[in-house]
Image (cartoon, rainbow, N blue to C red):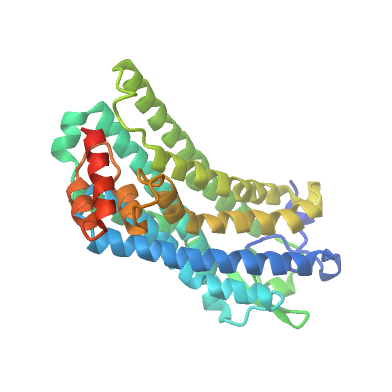
Length: 363
């Protein structure tokens, strides 16, 4: 691709996470419909994300015994919760016809949190997969060395690495006044964008490095590692004929699949963006808002999955909090089961009866 063909005149009006710059007159007539749709979707995601992840953080922190499993889930929830706290600014930006009124610093932070959330989530899912693989392959070693302290150390490393990989947003995100509106966009140019109608070679290579690094570290490599871990687990369980006696890791597997389904369109379109001159504009003008909405929606999905896939979901007499605790404490062992049992003592007589029935089935 020749970087000289890069049009650098205006960011997409219908998606502020875009890098491509296009003329205002090429704006699609569906823009207003897309804006209304995005505002509605993002508002729902924001509400569910703050409420759901807030509940997960509260319950896992104050109502459950600290285990390796709860450490993973708490950190996943914190990453999503932080992103959702800043989502109202993005909603306001879209509602005001893509006029960013929060300043350049917040423009950088808003984009940074999106990618930090992506990296933190995918790295946590990768570590969880590796942790479970080790637990199956080396159960004795895992029993002796798998600790909450080690999990916390791993999480600190993940947050630091995610910060480093998300930092390009703090450097290249920029604002500019265009046609009476302030645009928040990715400015990879080596000189002020308004003085340069076309992206220079340095800017193109910056864009290339950031996009490819984001795809490899935030998507492809984690996919390969996670797939290898779960294939190993399945083979080990089948070889030992334990597939029917060990409870499947259905919640975490579903979370992983959901994450990659949500982020796959987003990552694909950003790769195509490197060759935008050979791709129809409608692919980006319609595809990027939809792909970004799907990716952002992932930040509210985990708490929903915890509840709907918990062991007690089919028993509607069991309280919502009981289901949530059950999902968070689900693991290969029963390390968090005592705290789960004590928590459900606050439920009704029918709930206790349901829990006793489950305990009998487990034995």
